[in-house]
Length: 192
Image (cartoon, rainbow, N blue to C red; front, side):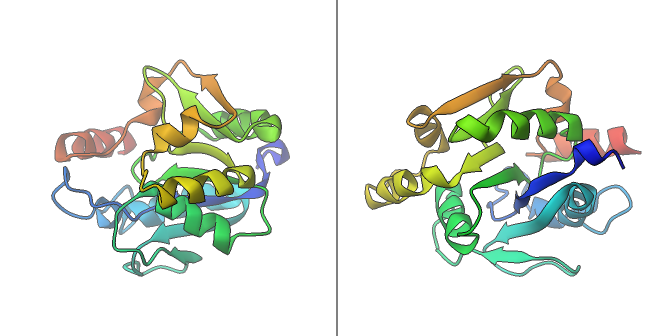
């Protein structure tokens, strides 16, 4: 492995969503040669980060992993981010990615991380911005807490009110999001 593609920050894979458009928990769908999409993402990204975690509401996984449990009843990525920063309190920056974006290139992740030194948040944009694929700095935590005190759960609100850098990317395909059965089948055909 190219040593310039090793990142001295942790990675957290978000697996706690409702998967309402998929109709079943997408984190547990089979993918590539793995029993689940979550295991695929975990094993794919693990060699590149100093530590890797899965963020979820429950331990629904049957593979060896580091788990961050968010026990709140509300499904909110903002609550997940607060939990992640409180548990990984010694980390300044954390790379966050959703379980359902299995094609984000390691080179793109490197560009995001390289840009992240002077920003609260760095996220990519191809045809649209990808709010939950990027580096989030611990400097966001107090604003996240303030948002939750005001019952604001929109990631976009956090991004617009933080020192955010947008990385322009050309390839929207790498951000293919497996939200429904059609996208899932498309992704499976790409990977085979």
